[in-house]
Length: 109
Image: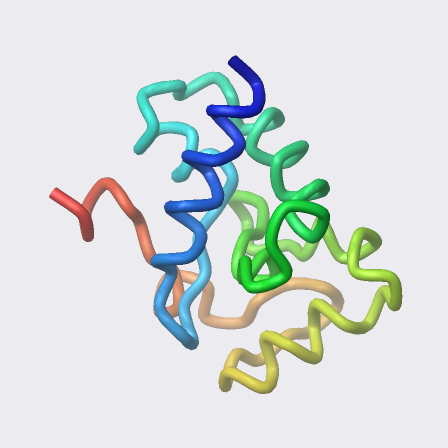
């Protein structure tokens, strides 16, 4: 079950547009597993071993905090990748989070 769930998570993450972010919980809700935000986090922690093209930096917590930054090798890498896409970060938090937020449940009807 875990491996197929992870693959579904990765398929959603690959669809997040450039300059947008989503949350672990939004992905879990879209996949019909609303209580599985933590499992989405585990999937993201392992995404680099599955496919290096997964834009894991675009997945943050529900408040726009870069909680997964320690899984990028260099703790500043997640912030740099997001800033390269035009997203401003202060104190590990996305500024104007609602403007950058992409909800797969709304976008992929």
